[in-house]
Image (cartoon, rainbow, N blue to C red; front, top):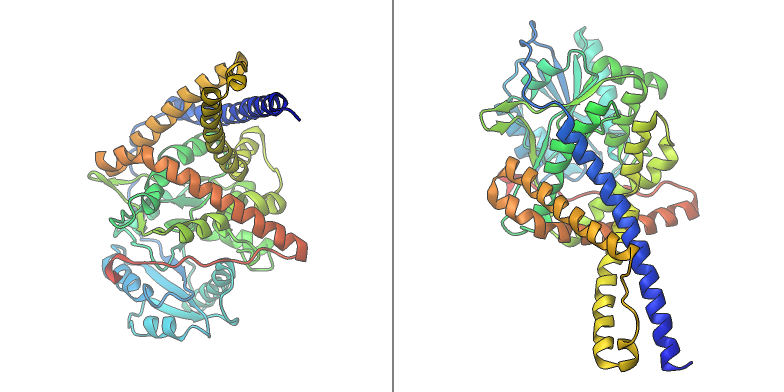
Length: 449
């Protein structure tokens, strides 16, 4: 094969790949733009808060804890000391083969705290631990002769806002699920990896979830800082042999929101501002590359891969659109990686054109439709970065807002690595005919260092 033939194959292949990737990226960008336009069109402005219920409702706070000795003690002490609500009880799910966490919880003497040691050795899925906690809640209700108004879910590393239960109490009437925003904590040692979670959650909880709520689609739970109406959770339990959480699920929080919507429950994302700060759940997110990839791979596996199998495509047009948005994530992460690789190949092509006369005579790579797609994608990228910076800056200040655009590159690379890991683990699980293993995230708590 001659050099001219090799160059022709190179040129055609690169041009076709460029057009295909540009087309997919454009479709995805227009999909994201539709959410932006919906957010711009939806009603804004604070709604008057309803008066606090009288008498105050009782809440059960469920906290699953596997290998959390380093954070669970500080988290519980702060929660019990600061929560500004008279009626709540905390149930902590532990494992018989985790003595360090048991000791950390047992050291706290508070009548509002109940330690629940499950029947199985850990680790199991978070959903399995939550089912043990649910059984403890039922036993407590029977013993006390009363029923909790709602079940609140938290993790062992959460910094719970002092007014969280008060906000839930005002918002729950008329709602089956109320989700508070999640605010990832800044990490001076990891401004890019830990910091990119700040941008993702700001945009998701300030824009994506309010749009889904406005359009009437299912609202995915974050699994922390969320309250579920007790009667609704009881209905879900009745469908599942009295266990409301599916122990085989890697993302029981996401599926919970989907099931509540399927059963006709109304959900909301609650932005309850106290001065210039919202009532929200804060926590540290992974600060290293490997930890972030592991966490995001679990999310992608549970939502986009297993979720497709487990939940199917239920609901109307808007609901299916949102399911598609959730499930396109692995594909788009890999397409974005392909776009970065194409940019490098285009640079190599430019060098070849400079060094070889034969290459210099080849037509441009981006002609006609390809060029139009590239300009469209450039405009959509600029818009996307401006939107992300605006939401981050609005919530976390101008410094974090300015960091959002460069962190988008880090987030894209992390998501691509997570997609590759998720696809590999899911394929391996399918080969042996079982669900993918649940992988724990190592947690930190601010007061624990």
